[in-house]
Length: 208
Image (cartoon, rainbow, N blue to C red; front, side, top):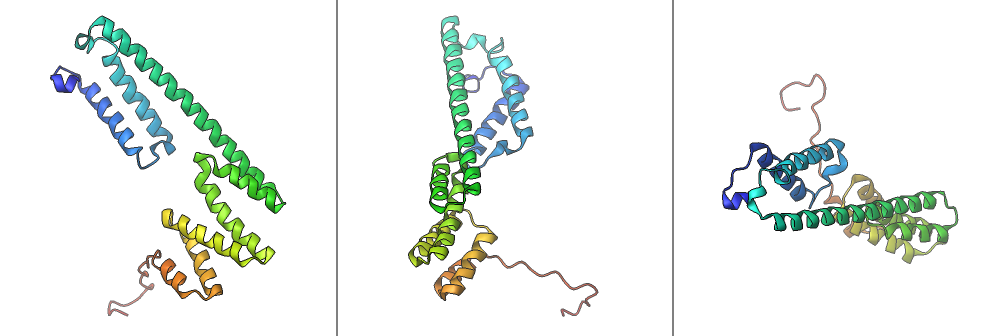
């Protein structure tokens, strides 16, 4: 509103508002708070901006009654988001506990149930999904159930399409060789990017 009304606002508040907007926009696709210093910068940006908005720099923008309403609304919003964040964090801890229990579980069906419980947690869903794929393939080998192996491989293919990594790709390529599935091998090979080999030490400049 200060920008639209062309009201004076300090350079510090402009910086803080811009940084908060940058973090929020970035968080739509990435995880900026994996680095603790990013959380510190965001807290500083909020503090600098709120000092002016909640202090005296923008009091003239709204009436005292409206200002009191918006202060209470802002406080309620922050409290609600904090509560949801605590619940989300607790759910992630539950998912981690289920993954740990699954790693220590020796009975196959009990381990499968623990992995499914971990999959229900949004914070560890990607890890649980990957482990379920490998578990299905391994259990299918032991139980000699080809359909279970195929289900696990198909699930892993879908996982690689979302989050490709060399370990999973080579695992699928190895299985494509065992199954003599040339189509799967060709498809997985597309995910590999051939890196240029470094020149041999002491090589001459004649192109060899």
